[in-house]
Amino acid sequence: MSSPTMFISVVDPDHTVKAPLDIAIGAKVIVVPMPSIVELLQDTARRARFAATHRAVREALRTHSHPPSLTDESIVNLVRRARQNVHNH
Image (cartoon, rainbow, N blue to C red; front, side, top):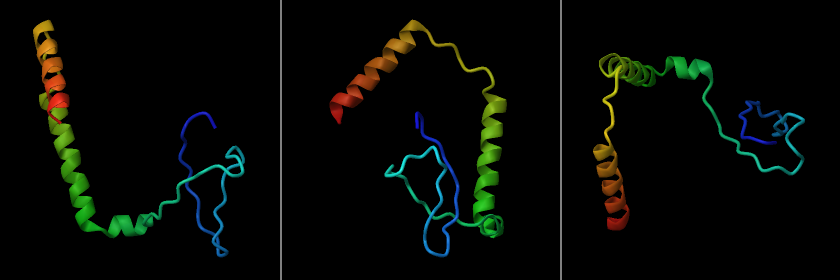
């Protein structure tokens, strides 16, 4: 397997999880329990957070559709600040 890929599977009654054939026997994998789509759709607080985030992203894209140009001086200042933060932590 050359790059990380996500697969979704269901735990069988005997607690086995089927993996695609290109995942080697003995390979380390992560198993993460997920809520069902019905549970996700019924979670009104989660849906409200998603809608608010979606609105914020759309607004940011609308108002900042043309990011400011970076000058050599601003890049140098950013690098200096980053180096100072590394040394201070």
